[in-house]
Length: 147
Image (cartoon, rainbow, N blue to C red; front, top):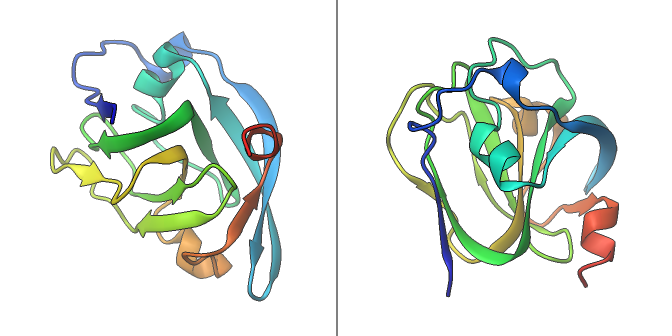
């Protein structure tokens, strides 16, 4: 099993150094569909940069990290200035785990409990506010092409 360790401390870039494609996705929750505007991180450089150095993240926005294959993900929040909810997503789009209100600047490891295809990062507390739970389904073309 391949292990992806996304330690961002070695990256000296700022948020303006890496460009991200803008897209949208929806999350099918028990109470309805939630639509989010996202940026897609699907290259190594984009995944390394992620949401580091950002000072704010608007409601109903986030970043979708595409790892291209099922992989054991380990992240931390060093150089990340805002709390985030991290949604760990299987290849069929099912949310398998949520790390809620992660702590800015923390070097504590946030690990997926199982290999996942993607991580969706949204503002801290946003998953609860929007009613997003484990078992809900993320709808985006990346999950359709990998089933």
